[in-house]
Length: 132
Image 1 (tube, rainbow, N blue to C red):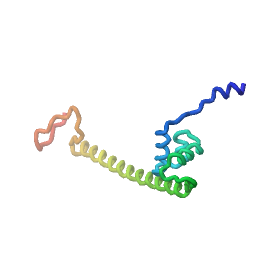
Image 2 (image 1 turned 60 degrees about the vertical axis):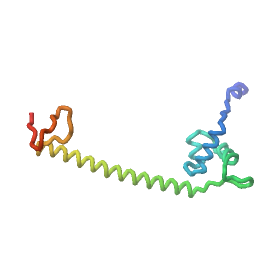
Image 3 (image 1 turned 90 degrees about the vertical axis):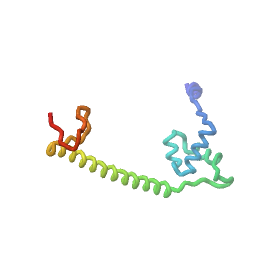
Image 4 (image 1 turned 60 degrees about the horizontal axis):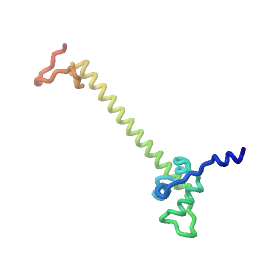
């Protein structure tokens, strides 16, 4: 039975372009090796072997070491950017709610239809439109 299972196992082959793209993503700092491992489903040692083989910065006899501080610093920067974008989104939502309320008030209290509806007649001047 075990010999049959062994025949069913498949080995994945990756093109050199794909390997070089993975190495380029690592070298540019976009992704760490663990992130690439999760993203593509490729084992950690395989990615490191590609780095040793295809890296433009790798010299023979040197090891590639990824500092945990750089990964945690990158994560903190991304979290700070996320908080900043969430705050900006919140401010825009408040502005949108304010403007919607102002449009509603203009319609109910001042009898001015600010929203352009399909049934709204064209303006004939500066006078008020008659309500139907």
